[in-house]
Image 1 (cartoon, rainbow, N blue to C red):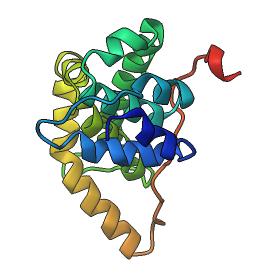
Image 2: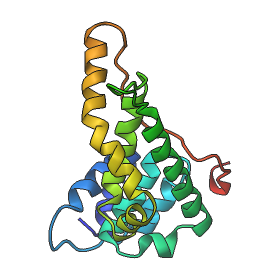
Image 3: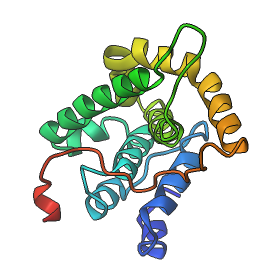
Image 4: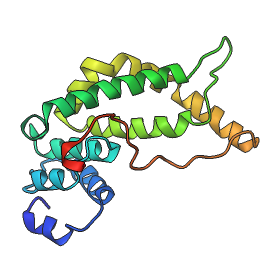
Length: 182
């Protein structure tokens, strides 16, 4: 799985293919690293996409220190700062009133994207460190109320007040210019 010939056989696959593959690969105990992590990262480099950061943290899960060795520190810092703002926004978006949460209908799909990203981050040492040092308390509060918010969302859809939104794929979130993607 970690050999370069595996990459060559699947080089034309979309980023989602690699995210799913590495997601499964990172769960295998005793796995070895991948030889093509740097090539894969460069191919899909776009600091503004959730899927790119999912991929980076999954590569980091199988190739320790990948983030530190291969990712621009300014891009990583911009990502972390934006993640902090997004998690804080999700907490504010819960909009608790005295008796219940008063979320907007777009809260759930956004929460699902951030939750998936954070799950991928938890697979890597660098991702766990970012979560523990920068967003843990706020994220725990969001997660604590997420089931209630999901149930509220489902009830509002079922009653016909809201529509169901699909997951936000290839969601852009960092407002910075990526010199490699002009």
